[in-house]
Image 1: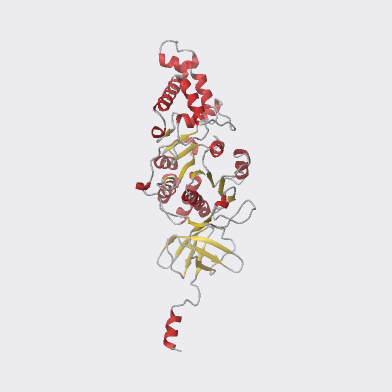
Image 2 (image 1 turned 120 degrees about the vertical axis):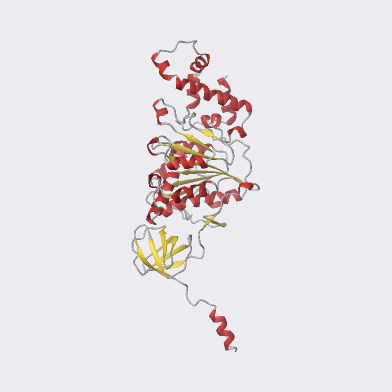
Length: 431
């Protein structure tokens, strides 16, 4: 036996797996030493009683700083830390349809474990700008005010902006129920646990055959809430790669941003507008730009809800989201006083691709509807106090004659659904 050759072969074989140790620990961050890491590495923390996972979010010369996915109660200084070779990937398959899972695709509905067909990376580059297909086909959602006046396109990214309690969840449920796509991916990020069964049974009517729900509730760690959104987008991308058209709907971008704010501030990032660190504004396009239409594959049509603090549309997260998305639907608390549900403020809302997906006649009818509605709003006080004299303004006279029709057009029950053709016929009556 050649002893030198044997020694040479053994020299390159690791006799034990490299590991580090916990040097400092708090409820929201962990510092480890003893292993070389890079930002984004997945770390497994172990002691004799439990195992947990964390991600490297900052690296210094001798230390790595982690943000935990799980609660860290039970860990102590000196516990071991291993780099996971699998890195940040999740198992995806057609078995996800009809399921409620956490961001790691672990069942939350008490059913069997997901058998993976493909491992999908959680973090990946958005669609290349030159590989994006042109948005040319309407995406009907069965809601008159959206399909008629704010028409969406297949592969578009839209925001639903509203204050608390105005009706975001109800509108989301209507869109998910009525959307024509084969697959619907719903991401509930940072919301109350009570809302999960409510959304399934009340908003979806218990029918989840074509729906995947990814859940990271408000009691989950900040990292779980942050990556819950990215995991949900990866699930949508899995179905898109099968050539399917996917509806992706996320509630809410604000909770996602708050999770990154917790992480950033814990790492010493400087707070900017409303305490949000710069990393928050860098993160939003990384998520949102992954949706869209890609040549040779399926599409992801995305709706992102944004919780507007105090109904203030100049909120930094709302402002940044509006600049990234292809349109915005604004829910107005004042409209609920007039019994208009869903309370969509059509004057403050816009779809940037509507002109590319509708006919000239549809576009003209929608413009006329908005103009007459705007004239009514501007002169509402005069009309109510009886100061307006009929015949003074022909356009205002027409708007007053169409007032009841327009209000009926904007109103819609939760269970009602209208085909795109029906919406066009109703909108044509504005003439």
